[in-house]
Image (cartoon, rainbow, N blue to C red):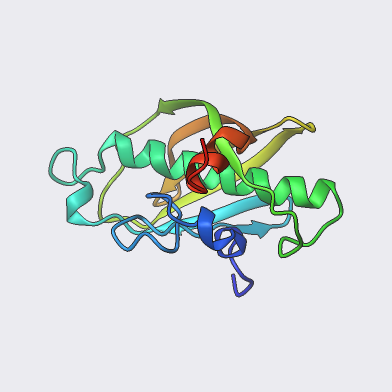
Length: 161
């Protein structure tokens, strides 16, 4: 994974997300990449991500699925339009729906592999199915419906009413 991560293409003003924003020094700084027709991100949990000793808390799992999936949605939308991710106008997504199934306890000592599959791309939304694996075992799976960043959020960011 030597290419630039999807999240590294986000415009400066859209790079503050707790899960994947490169400007959020307290966040997870998740980085997602194409791996053929799937997407992949790797994440090493830390002690602060503990649910019970030895295992990751579910909120982290949901955050990883959420941010990896919205990053995948952006990359898929660019691909569908035949555009490079560094072209304008920027395409950015937010989560309209997040569903997570926890299949097995997720060990905190293992590096987590998040994999995404693009299920559907339409002009209004992208649907992604993602899994989280630890030590080769699927621990969680999720489905995200991602929609284009609403204009109302852009206005707030710009200080407009």
